[in-house]
Length: 164
Length: 164
Image (cartoon, rainbow over the protein chains, first blue to last red):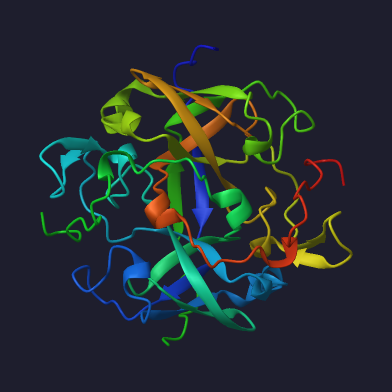
């Protein structure tokens, strides 16, 4: 393995490409997993200059939204959750307060109208900046033998942000 | 839905948190889906200052790597693939040449040694900048009823970058 060259840490600029509109105005209203509240509908507004990038997206039933947790607070590399009594590293969790606050959510694509995608099963705060969309493709994105790790068979409902 | 306010497009700074080491030095060597070549092993080198963030990650069998496609070329919002004769939008595909060249890969976690993760089923170029790691959690990340969209039942092997 090559050795890290000092000061070779790179920075990258990420540009907002749209806005996620959802019924959830505050962290406390927002479900942790969108599947748990399938009635939660949202609109994904892609800025019009990117509309051509949506061509044939309506052939998919589910898409993966990439966004910035712009309401995230202090980053802690390890923290207690309320699921068990052990601390878990931020890379072993989906916690929003992480280095490079990037979030992903799999949502159900209901309808496309030009640059607007109507979705359900959303778990994202209203007005969250969108940075990418990828199709959810079960034949690639499912690992049959994967385990749920420390989250086990518990229903995973960490407290919303700011309710530690 | 609120109306977009002109010039409200935000930029975000993303910082490299590590390096993905893999056996694939060129785009032509790199498999499109790591599952297809399970013997492909790699090392995920998280910069030592983030090591605490890995706490309990070894309880998971699979993790999701987030990285920057730093070898990506010209961005096209829509392009032909060699799977069929129709163009597909970049947000309806996993193509690396996309706005905000963020890639994700689900890999199998074999072993952790401090800040180094040994993984298999890798499909990432050697020396790719790492920007996040999240656990793959099948109970959240699997959508039983999802369809494969335009990729259908075909084996999805788009030509590697630079081989259009």
